[in-house]
Length: 82
Image 1 (cartoon, rainbow, N blue to C red):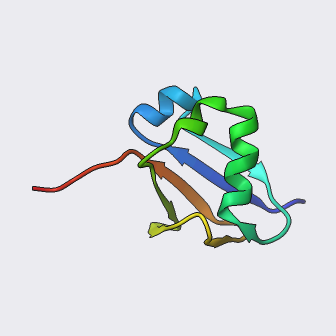
Image 2 (image 1 turned 90 degrees about the vertical axis):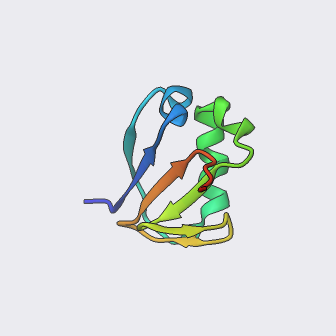
């Protein structure tokens, strides 16, 4: 049985992606930017993702982060505190 990753989209990104979450087969470690490139092929609206925050297993990361089978990746809209 292949390993999987879970990808979650929040706020308006759910609308852009057309889904709240998806689980995908995932066999080997790779940089998050490689996964993003694959997602952009199937969800072109993500190409205009300026300011989007990304988290892996509930920790904010940049697109150089290495993801592993079993990880949960979240795409979050820009936000600020006050």
